Length: 115
Length: 109
Image 1 (tube, rainbow over the protein chains, first blue to last red):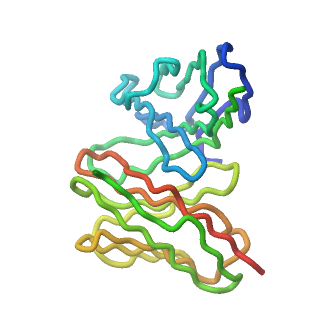
Image 2: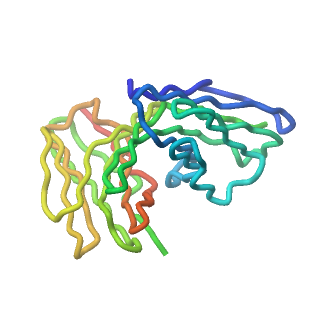
Protein backbone atom coordinates (compact mmCIF):
# COMPACT_ATOMS: atom_id res chain seq x y z
CA UNK A 1 0.00 0.00 0.00
CA UNK A 2 1.65 3.21 -1.19
CA UNK A 3 -0.92 5.66 0.17
CA UNK A 4 -2.08 6.55 -3.34
CA UNK A 5 -5.30 4.94 -4.58
CA UNK A 6 -6.46 4.90 -8.18
CA UNK A 7 -9.80 3.84 -9.60
CA UNK A 8 -10.77 2.08 -11.72
CA UNK A 9 -7.96 -0.46 -12.10
CA UNK A 10 -9.11 -1.37 -15.60
CA UNK A 11 -11.15 0.57 -18.13
CA UNK A 12 -12.30 -0.29 -21.62
CA UNK A 13 -13.91 2.50 -23.61
CA UNK A 14 -14.95 3.30 -27.11
CA UNK A 15 -13.62 6.30 -28.96
CA UNK A 16 -16.84 8.26 -28.42
CA UNK A 17 -17.14 7.61 -24.69
CA UNK A 18 -16.44 9.99 -21.83
CA UNK A 19 -14.88 8.60 -18.67
CA UNK A 20 -12.86 9.82 -15.71
CA UNK A 21 -9.93 8.39 -13.79
CA UNK A 22 -9.71 9.12 -10.09
CA UNK A 23 -6.73 9.37 -7.78
CA UNK A 24 -6.63 9.97 -4.04
CA UNK A 25 -3.57 10.35 -1.83
CA UNK A 26 -3.57 9.86 1.93
CA UNK A 27 -0.04 11.12 2.56
CA UNK A 28 -0.58 14.84 3.05
CA UNK A 29 1.54 15.66 0.02
CA UNK A 30 1.35 19.00 -1.79
CA UNK A 31 1.97 17.84 -5.38
CA UNK A 32 0.18 15.35 -7.62
CA UNK A 33 1.02 14.00 -11.06
CA UNK A 34 -0.44 12.09 -14.00
CA UNK A 35 1.92 9.84 -15.96
CA UNK A 36 1.32 7.68 -19.03
CA UNK A 37 3.16 4.35 -19.17
CA UNK A 38 3.29 2.48 -22.48
CA UNK A 39 5.01 -0.86 -22.95
CA UNK A 40 8.79 -0.59 -23.29
CA UNK A 41 8.69 3.21 -23.22
CA UNK A 42 9.78 5.69 -20.55
CA UNK A 43 7.18 7.18 -18.27
CA UNK A 44 5.64 10.26 -19.88
CA UNK A 45 4.73 13.11 -17.55
CA UNK A 46 1.33 14.50 -18.52
CA UNK A 47 0.29 16.95 -15.80
CA UNK A 48 1.61 18.27 -12.50
CA UNK A 49 -0.39 20.03 -9.81
CA UNK A 50 1.40 21.83 -7.01
CA UNK A 51 -0.72 23.27 -4.21
CA UNK A 52 -3.77 22.56 -6.39
CA UNK A 53 -2.49 24.68 -9.28
CA UNK A 54 -1.45 23.15 -12.57
CA UNK A 55 2.22 23.83 -13.10
CA UNK A 56 3.00 21.47 -15.96
CA UNK A 57 1.19 20.47 -19.12
CA UNK A 58 3.50 18.62 -21.46
CA UNK A 59 1.71 19.23 -24.76
CA UNK A 60 -0.95 16.72 -23.91
CA UNK A 61 -3.88 16.54 -26.36
CA UNK A 62 -7.01 18.33 -25.21
CA UNK A 63 -8.93 15.05 -25.11
CA UNK A 64 -7.23 14.63 -21.73
CA UNK A 65 -8.46 17.12 -19.13
CA UNK A 66 -7.12 17.12 -15.55
CA UNK A 67 -8.89 18.40 -12.48
CA UNK A 68 -7.51 18.89 -8.97
CA UNK A 69 -10.31 19.98 -6.59
CA UNK A 70 -8.09 19.76 -3.50
CA UNK A 71 -4.64 18.58 -2.49
CA UNK A 72 -5.79 14.99 -1.93
CA UNK A 73 -7.74 14.33 -5.12
CA UNK A 74 -6.86 14.31 -8.79
CA UNK A 75 -8.97 13.41 -11.78
CA UNK A 76 -8.23 12.79 -15.44
CA UNK A 77 -11.25 13.31 -17.67
CA UNK A 78 -11.16 11.46 -20.95
CA UNK A 79 -13.19 12.03 -24.12
CA UNK A 80 -12.94 11.13 -27.77
CA UNK A 81 -9.83 9.05 -27.17
CA UNK A 82 -7.83 7.27 -29.86
CA UNK A 83 -6.59 3.66 -29.84
CA UNK A 84 -3.01 4.92 -29.36
CA UNK A 85 -4.10 6.32 -25.99
CA UNK A 86 -4.33 2.78 -24.66
CA UNK A 87 -1.78 2.57 -21.84
CA UNK A 88 -1.33 2.40 -18.08
CA UNK A 89 -2.13 5.76 -16.47
CA UNK A 90 -0.30 6.30 -13.22
CA UNK A 91 -1.02 8.87 -10.57
CA UNK A 92 1.72 9.95 -8.15
CA UNK A 93 2.19 12.35 -5.29
CA UNK A 94 5.16 13.96 -3.55
CA UNK A 95 6.00 16.51 -0.91
CA UNK A 96 7.78 19.28 -2.80
CA UNK A 97 10.49 21.21 -1.04
CA UNK A 98 12.38 22.52 -4.05
CA UNK A 99 15.60 20.84 -3.00
CA UNK A 100 15.41 17.83 -5.28
CA UNK A 101 15.36 14.27 -4.08
CA UNK A 102 11.65 14.25 -3.34
CA UNK A 103 10.52 10.75 -4.06
CA UNK A 104 7.29 9.95 -5.82
CA UNK A 105 4.60 7.70 -4.40
CA UNK A 106 2.65 6.01 -7.18
CA UNK A 107 -0.76 4.45 -7.39
CA UNK A 108 -1.20 1.07 -9.06
CA UNK A 109 -2.56 2.72 -12.19
CA UNK A 110 -5.54 2.41 -14.48
CA UNK A 111 -5.02 0.09 -17.45
CA UNK A 112 -6.92 1.81 -20.24
CA UNK A 113 -7.95 0.14 -23.49
CA UNK A 114 -9.52 2.26 -26.23
CA UNK A 115 -11.42 0.30 -28.84
CA UNK B 1 18.61 16.18 -25.87
CA UNK B 2 18.09 14.47 -22.58
CA UNK B 3 18.30 10.70 -22.47
CA UNK B 4 18.45 7.68 -20.20
CA UNK B 5 19.74 4.29 -21.35
CA UNK B 6 19.25 1.02 -19.51
CA UNK B 7 19.04 -2.59 -20.74
CA UNK B 8 15.60 -3.78 -21.77
CA UNK B 9 15.77 -7.15 -20.07
CA UNK B 10 18.11 -9.18 -17.87
CA UNK B 11 18.00 -12.71 -16.51
CA UNK B 12 19.66 -13.93 -13.32
CA UNK B 13 19.58 -16.93 -11.02
CA UNK B 14 18.06 -17.08 -7.56
CA UNK B 15 20.75 -16.49 -4.92
CA UNK B 16 23.09 -14.74 -7.35
CA UNK B 17 24.07 -11.08 -7.81
CA UNK B 18 22.94 -8.84 -10.67
CA UNK B 19 23.96 -5.32 -11.68
CA UNK B 20 21.58 -3.13 -13.68
CA UNK B 21 23.32 -0.25 -15.41
CA UNK B 22 21.95 3.16 -16.30
CA UNK B 23 23.62 5.96 -18.26
CA UNK B 24 22.15 9.43 -18.43
CA UNK B 25 22.54 12.68 -20.34
CA UNK B 26 20.71 15.62 -18.81
CA UNK B 27 20.81 19.40 -18.75
CA UNK B 28 22.23 19.79 -15.29
CA UNK B 29 21.85 17.15 -12.61
CA UNK B 30 20.01 16.98 -9.31
CA UNK B 31 20.22 13.31 -8.52
CA UNK B 32 19.32 9.86 -9.76
CA UNK B 33 16.46 7.62 -8.65
CA UNK B 34 15.77 3.91 -8.90
CA UNK B 35 12.24 2.53 -8.67
CA UNK B 36 10.98 -1.06 -8.64
CA UNK B 37 7.76 -2.00 -10.41
CA UNK B 38 6.19 -5.44 -10.14
CA UNK B 39 3.84 -6.38 -12.96
CA UNK B 40 0.46 -4.72 -12.48
CA UNK B 41 1.61 -2.76 -9.46
CA UNK B 42 2.76 0.73 -8.55
CA UNK B 43 6.40 1.73 -8.99
CA UNK B 44 8.01 2.01 -5.56
CA UNK B 45 11.06 4.05 -4.57
CA UNK B 46 14.31 2.16 -4.04
CA UNK B 47 17.11 4.72 -3.88
CA UNK B 48 18.29 8.27 -4.54
CA UNK B 49 21.91 9.23 -5.22
CA UNK B 50 23.15 12.78 -5.68
CA UNK B 51 26.79 12.36 -4.62
CA UNK B 52 29.34 10.00 -6.14
CA UNK B 53 29.72 6.64 -4.51
CA UNK B 54 27.89 3.58 -3.33
CA UNK B 55 24.86 3.58 -1.04
CA UNK B 56 23.82 0.30 0.49
CA UNK B 57 20.37 -0.64 1.73
CA UNK B 58 20.21 -4.26 2.73
CA UNK B 59 20.40 -6.49 -0.34
CA UNK B 60 20.16 -3.50 -2.69
CA UNK B 61 22.94 -0.97 -3.41
CA UNK B 62 23.05 1.97 -5.79
CA UNK B 63 26.14 3.58 -7.25
CA UNK B 64 26.64 6.94 -8.95
CA UNK B 65 29.44 8.47 -10.98
CA UNK B 66 28.52 12.03 -11.96
CA UNK B 67 31.60 12.50 -14.13
CA UNK B 68 30.68 9.46 -16.21
CA UNK B 69 26.90 10.02 -16.21
CA UNK B 70 26.53 6.49 -14.91
CA UNK B 71 24.68 4.63 -12.21
CA UNK B 72 24.01 1.04 -11.34
CA UNK B 73 21.68 -0.87 -9.08
CA UNK B 74 23.21 -3.94 -7.47
CA UNK B 75 20.94 -6.67 -6.16
CA UNK B 76 22.49 -9.39 -3.99
CA UNK B 77 21.17 -12.77 -2.83
CA UNK B 78 18.47 -12.63 -5.46
CA UNK B 79 15.02 -13.87 -4.54
CA UNK B 80 12.14 -14.81 -6.82
CA UNK B 81 10.22 -11.77 -5.56
CA UNK B 82 12.92 -9.54 -7.10
CA UNK B 83 11.48 -10.33 -10.53
CA UNK B 84 10.24 -6.91 -11.59
CA UNK B 85 11.03 -3.93 -13.78
CA UNK B 86 13.61 -1.48 -12.49
CA UNK B 87 13.22 2.14 -13.56
CA UNK B 88 16.09 4.61 -13.64
CA UNK B 89 15.31 8.35 -13.58
CA UNK B 90 17.63 11.37 -13.52
CA UNK B 91 16.58 14.79 -12.27
CA UNK B 92 17.72 17.71 -14.40
CA UNK B 93 18.54 21.29 -13.43
CA UNK B 94 14.83 22.20 -13.49
CA UNK B 95 14.02 19.33 -11.11
CA UNK B 96 12.30 17.47 -13.95
CA UNK B 97 12.62 13.69 -13.97
CA UNK B 98 13.97 12.06 -17.13
CA UNK B 99 12.97 8.40 -17.16
CA UNK B 100 14.48 5.33 -18.73
CA UNK B 101 12.26 2.69 -20.34
CA UNK B 102 12.96 0.27 -17.50
CA UNK B 103 14.84 -3.02 -17.19
CA UNK B 104 12.77 -6.16 -16.82
CA UNK B 105 14.60 -8.54 -14.47
CA UNK B 106 13.72 -12.22 -14.69
CA UNK B 107 14.87 -14.45 -11.84
CA UNK B 108 15.16 -18.17 -12.52
CA UNK B 109 15.32 -20.89 -9.86
